[in-house]
Length: 403
Image (cartoon, rainbow, N blue to C red; front, side):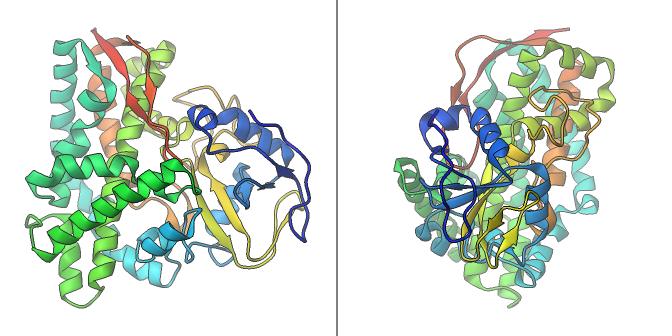
């Protein structure tokens, strides 16, 4: 890992570091670097990306609540290309615009709206668990984590059958586009451009299946409540948020339970812990590690460090979720830990709109597996999908041993 240095960061000064969070080595294992940065201060200037890193739980939660100071309106990426391209995306809006547009999404993702899906998701989860037992060895990404997002959520949103494999493929790398200018970012921009072109073609040719989330969203556009560009931007949000993050969390769950058999035994003994287990998976392996914000005014952190107005900041959900100031044994996977709140689904106005659906899927699938599987084993070398923003496996060879 690169060294750290105390450097002067702009007129305000403050702790600084030359750590490169976006190198392949740190993307593969970012947590020691996060701890180093937390220990340096509540906010640390990263000279390699000209941005301040906020990684302590208290300060991250405060920043996520304070959209007036830590604004999303200039984008959540670390390069101007993505911030311009995503200017209509929901994650790049502040209230009151964000509030009004989010209503369109939350009306179809609320607990009441999702309740009728519970039986469908439970049945699909049971079939998946039976299939893994019958198969024995499987890839926890392709054979397991893809199942519910592809088999249920694609229908729920209403994507036409012929584009589903391509949408999933394009979603995988799109978060890379929000990183600093590096090879992964440029590759992500290409994928994102292809994804937006595909969504636009579907929208303009009215190829959305009737009755799904997408049809309702497009109805709002046709009624004049939102623009065509806004609708297309929000449809893109359905893809990267509803698929990639849930797939990441599901595969991480298999890995975590294989590595922590005592926690799997705990879940088998107490199936009601499944929802807490889902939260703990998202805490310790946050699918989205960091987003950036624009600091609109001088902002004093909890330790007195001042982030200057006009600075770009990196708000780290993943670092906050492993902050020893907030969590006991933060690097341990403990499904019934007493600290129940974490920031893996975000917080404040930009808290994940789809977190109810994600929890429903994770709870259903690990409940079904707990009733059937004695233990998981990792049967080959896992391969990480290195990404500027997301944390995920590309492949994860595993075995399910029947109870």
